[in-house]
Length: 209
Image 1 (cartoon, rainbow, N blue to C red):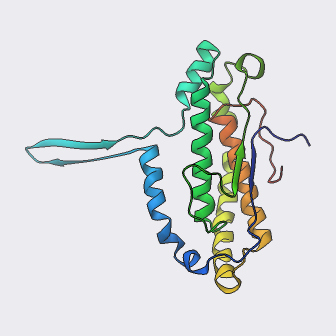
Image 2 (image 1 turned 45 degrees about the horizontal axis):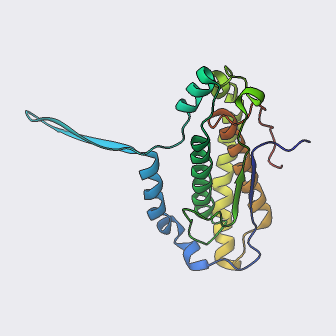
Image 3 (image 1 turned 90 degrees about the horizontal axis):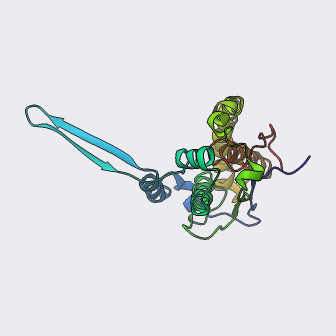
């Protein structure tokens, strides 16, 4: 099997994991989730009778999907800094996900890759991409969304089992680790294809490389 352009791996911790921070992971992950929320953006509001309404909005950027789609479609270009933003954002989000799922007990860095490795190539739009395909990639990926829905349920169950294993043994069961890593790999392939738009190669239905 040829390697898919989106490459993802998490280093298995060949050591005892911190049982205390693992026990309280649902709480220790909150600060970095607030940072994630600030990046992707949110809005809220309230209204009072007779006083009109007031809205508060704090907007982040998130993935640059729609702007990249328009540039590929109409100009045949993918600005390099847009590509770099999407890659670095996905790396950061994956570090947070890996930490939340107990696969690493080091707090997610906003810069260093740590144990999480995500790579995909900068596309040559004219040579590598069909300029009209980004309009329907999100639709073509629907079978993957369905499969990933059930795989992510398995991830939640695996993480709960791993939580108990870490508390008693200090180690993450390798089979559970490999399964979650595979689902995250699959997820990142779909994101790279349907939303980051770096390849026209349809993602494979498999957990491994």
